Each structure stands twice: as C-alpha cells, then as structure tokens.
Length: 73
Image 1 (cartoon, one colour):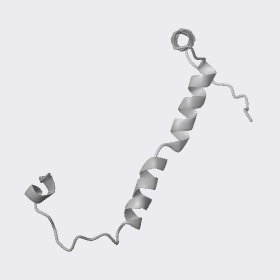
Image 2 (cartoon, one colour):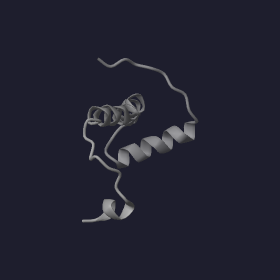
Image 3 (spheres, one colour):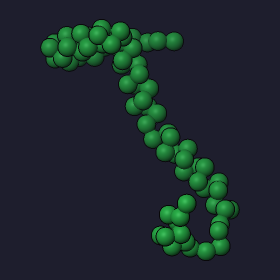
C-alpha cells in the first residue's frame, strides 16, 4: 500500500528532475520509490555476505597460502 508524503525542494530542481524522469520514461514518484528502497536496503547485501562467510568458517585449507600460490591458475 502506498502512502502519500510531502517533500520540499528547489523549484528548479523539481522541474529538471521531472524533465529527466520523463526522458527516461519514468516519474518522480517511481524514481523516489526506487531510491527509498535502495536507501532502506543499503547494507543488507553486505550483512548477507558476512552471514555466508561466517557459515563457511569450517572450510580451512590447513595452511596459509603464499601470494604466488593464491595467484596460480
């Protein structure tokens, strides 16, 4: 469910943003919703990666590799 909010910004910025959104076949509302979702979920991916890495702590090679060994193909 969408909820209306009121934002304020410089009139020129709004006009330029609307023109740019139109050229991208979008609207300010759609762009704001995308931005808001990215803002809220920022850091979520990093946290998920940390969880995966911690779950793999059982994988130990038994030794520390040298730089040359790590770069071998």
